[in-house]
Amino acid sequence: MIRRSLAVALLLSGIPAPALAEVLTEDNRALLCTRTYSGRPAVNLDTLALLIATKADATMLLDGANAGGVRDGAIQLVSMGTSLSEPIYAVVNAGRISPPHANRPFGPDIDLKTNETAARARNAIAQELAELASLMETNVQVSGSVVYRVMRPLTVGSRLTRADAANPLSLFVGAGLVIACEVDPVQIVDAGAGNREQDPVPSSGGIALRPVLRGSVKDLAIASDDLKDAEAATIAYSEDRIAQTSTFELDAVAGLRIGSNSGSFELIPYLSYERKAITGDDGDIETLSPGLMAAWHYRTPEFGFDARLEASFIDDIEQRSHQGKVRLYVDPAIWLGQDVGTLFGGNLHIFSPLLLRPKLTLIVDASKVWRAGTNDELSNAKDYWGVGGDLSLRARLNVGSPVSDFVLTGGMRYLKLQGDIDLRQAHRWYGSLEFAPNNFPFVGLALEFNDGRNDDTFQREDTYSLALRLRY
Amino acid sequence: MGRKSERIVSHALTDILAEAQLVVTIPGDVQIRIDVHVCLLDAMADQFGISREKIGAETVPSEEPIAASPVGWGMCLTRFERYLHELRPLYAAFDHQERYAEETLDLPFSKTKVYLYERLIEQLGMVLG
Image (tube, rainbow over the protein chains, first blue to last red):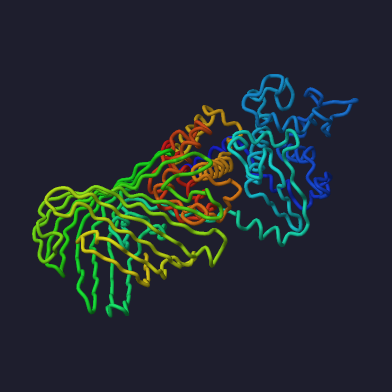
């Protein structure tokens, strides 16, 4: 709709098609590239302004009517110190919002409200200025064997700023803009390729359905795009030669994310399965837990959180116990300022090149035990609740692959328990060193340990294992 | 019939642009792309404490050096929304949706800005229509 209306608006206003590409051309190189910058040929801004004005059919309006537009009886085409040339003066003022009477682009006597030719020329120049600002974004324009490369934008730094975008007219004022002329296009074209805009990504509309596979219920609402942030479904095997035991573990949660149109609310039905089979010792675990999770997101630039409410039925097949649980998980994040970044929202750049990424999940848990079975920890338990959290720190060295593909993670989950249960607290330390290639994060290989109580059954675990991690 | 509605829309657009005093942005499209680019660049740099120079066309929010969490990236795009609103009155109608964050968390910067440009145009179109 808007595309169509923009086209119609352009048609009605008589603005010509974008023409900057017709100015920065191979043919115009000899005319344009008469300035030097660091020993290299660069675009002369007086000439650029003149060509822009010419393409905008404003040549006849450059009659020297502006202040300083005529010197020694001739129209000034070259800027002298603070005295702008006639074309630059016109171009700069053509883009200004409501310039004062004395600064009208084509002289004080040409009113753009009544002079249609002047108004059309002004609009065409404005279009070309916007294109010029666009060139600042891509940095490179290639025409035949000539490459026009923006060397220096109008403000400090090498990137266009919001202030520049708000006022691209100042491109011609002062020494802010330098466009170098180069004649070796091959490497320049490659350098520019990365900046070229690609096809837009289609937006999903309506209800979105996405299957997910995770290692933990609390990570079901994490987008598939951020796989490294999610606890992975795990198949692991470990062997204790001293105790002569071996352990096979399988830990997976499969869910279906059903998202609202805005994405701020989600429902996720899921099935969680945990299996730990120990040969030569006790402590087997097997639970099957269907559940339903509702996720809600809140965001401001300074504070945000993901909240997830989960209801599940836990069938401990090994110990023949049945529990119902309602859990609330909250992942907060707080902005600490431009120099530090966002705590719990991404990497903290404090000890470069070491990237530290803390993560916090607050947990409130209410449970009802229908059948304790042979689970000693639940033998006297009926209704109980817990409050606590899961705090972890991920570290990675930002020195490039393959070193950067190793991620060290350590953390602790703690839950203070209240109500009809003998156990007063349950905590678990965990850590891992994982290798997951950055360009293929679906599979990872990890050395990991767990020391503490199982999140659901509270059985003690103390395992060191080599794990294959799968994410989707 | 169709022609008549096109004219109404175009007048609405002209009115809004005039109201916003956007002489430079009469052509619209190019300037809006630039505005999205600079607002997103600033939002990412400010939100994650990273230099603007380190954000390139291939920078992916969920990957190094940013490694944004879903919450962090969502916060960043609300900052982007704020910067757009501050830049021009024309963008007052833009309302960030959380699904934008989810759908761009793993996209490079060059694709993200095109995605957000498309959403911005969509929303302005809704207002104009």
